Length: 314
Image (tube, rainbow, N blue to C red; front, top):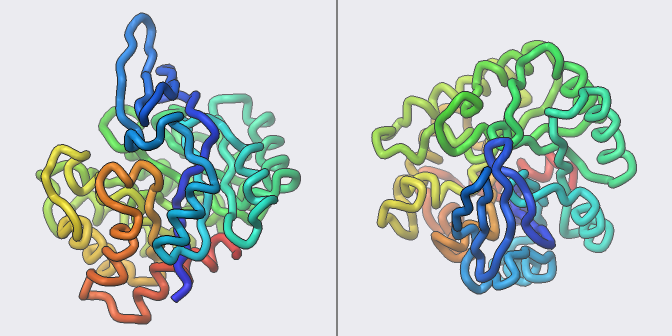
């Protein structure tokens, strides 16, 4: 079986943003310092073994080889920082192992963002654009962003969108995404982490009402896909629950997704390296390959690699 990790992070250091104006700075031993106005707090992003708070491709490749993962899609996130050039270098060095996604800040002038998208795809050879809406706060469905979405569609690459892991004005803008899809015919969108969809909320129980709202997009728009990266943490109530491998709540979320949209719209992903806070890399593979008994061999093959191969173009 070809296994492709559709959501893996590599970065040389952490210097990014959270919620629009809080700075994130890598410290030591997997800890990141969040600086906002006159306050500074610490948060563990990675296991202590990541001493320099970096995620290097050589280390990721070793984890992949050990777990039987053949290839990976390199995602970016504002909380890690913009590393377009670094990701492009990785892709150039290991083109048979990695495909990379670019990162833009939609708060800049839309003409500037459009030019940057063209540069990311044409010059850096990255195969899509990643958005983490609450960390670069914007309203995706607003008219002024239409040229940005049209440029992504024109370049023939997908937009990968993280709708956020919490609550607030900019989180879970499902209707904004629906408006984008309605206006830009053919635009391919991947909703990361099953749109998150309040899966961290213990009051959300199978079949997960908020997730069902997210999955309704697939019935309206054929170009919508979902990755299941990071669900080990999300479905364990953001790390506050004691659920461990094989993560029955995560399996139930995958089952609810499969029952609603089928196996051809789901892509396995890890969210490495942060996933190592809740389980091993091998275990996040085995959740699908050795568990999820509601899936047959054909469905597992699609979810574990074939869907990502088609979406990202390996």
